[in-house]
Image (cartoon, rainbow, N blue to C red; front, side):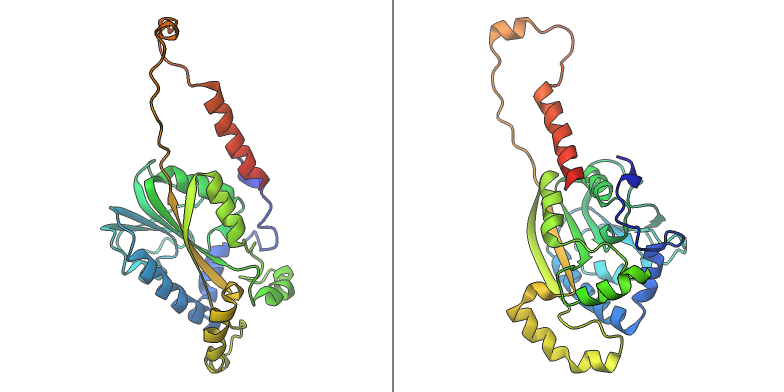
Length: 271
């Protein structure tokens, strides 16, 4: 699928690397507060996922997010374009064209990748191709239905990050993943406070975080979603002798399977 078919990135400035600007925003008081919560939840979730190879897309400065992972080999794909070696296992790449062999990764972490991609469907397809059966994808995103919605309306059209990104709801992400054959196993919402940039104010209204998280958890400004790549189990059927006699050289994939695959891809593009 061509990346320019999806126009979800139009509100942000195309002349700059949105992810690079986003990680600069994480250095602000609000960004630091959000990042600390993201690291907390990420470390809790990743400690329960196992395997041999983990890939984190984003900035190498966020390596702390995978600190508690039990996966033995971890790599970071820097998508900011800075090409600065900050840690081992770092390389540069683009989310829509993963330089990774098929069926090699056990865990893929996407911190705010889908919101600023021109084609989030392509990103998920690339992830799907790189994950092994029963592998996991961990997605961090901004919640379009949370307390931050008003700020997104006010500042999004001014091309200010992160507000200009295409915030995608957990329901839609789950639908996309289901079409690819994934099972969503856990969703967490967090940061139940207005997005003020003043550190003192953020600290004083922390009680709102605890109260709203219990009563209205889906109002959190951000979320983390974990999904597992399911394995299709096929029951072998003994072919009839008469049908087997008609086979010539080679095997042809059933037309129904081809049509099913094409329909699956088509449905995802429409969603």
